[in-house]
Image (cartoon, rainbow, N blue to C red; front, side):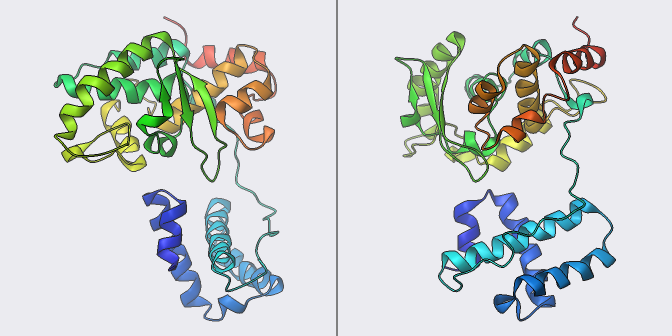
Amino acid sequence: MTLYEYLESHYTPATVESYHREITIFLSSYPSASMATYADLISYLGVLRERYNNAATLNRILCSIKVYYDYLCCTSRRSDHPARSILLRDQRSRDVQLQDLFTGEELERLLDRKERYQALYYRNRVLMGLLIYQGLKPQEIAAIGIQDINLEVGSIYIKSTPTTNSRTLSLKPGQILLFYTWLREVRPQLLKGADSDVLLIGHRSRSMSADDIVKHVISSYKNVYPGRSVTAQAIRGSVIANLLAQGHDISVVQRFAGHKYPSSTERYRQSQVEALKSAIEQYHPMR
């Protein structure tokens, strides 16, 4: 298995390109990287620290280096992982930016977008519903197969990703009829006889990738809320933050979001639930 094949089997296309680029730079500047020790990598990062003063850049490079050694371990080229325990002191801020959040009412308004083509209306409503009601990540949506949907009980199975756990979530009542029409009537028309188990179909009967989903949201809703960017990430963050603001237990929200660690969910609480609710209402008053 080549490095690129390994990356393709574990990450989204955009992440593959980012990691591959950084790893290529790492290997070109450190030819003996395959035999490096923990101390060697610490020294290498020290050199990078003198070159870059941006914590996000250093973290991106370190993540790429760790993935490179993940690959070596996976392909049995090394039995140890010299970078696994390395953490940077100047960790980039992972605080949720309140100004990027949307209220539940604002999220619902995103479903009112007019579509020129009826087929795309159903597909895009299914897509946006998964973002707004289930709070899914683009890569999770892209991986959903028709076999993962159970309309009889109104549920959908979400596969695990490198950063989220698998889980089964309930569909809203309004989603069930929408899914039924999409699966039984509209989706077969878009496939035009092609065979596919993927839920969402995009251009030329091909499945929608995570990148396609990200681009669709940005291009479709860029002018809806002036001054704020409507992105898949912002929508997911808003869903999680709003659940916490409504008083749901953090362990329940963690399972809903698929977070591997409670600390990932805790970031959306911003000190206390009431403070978060007040901040959301201050930035985005209900109309």
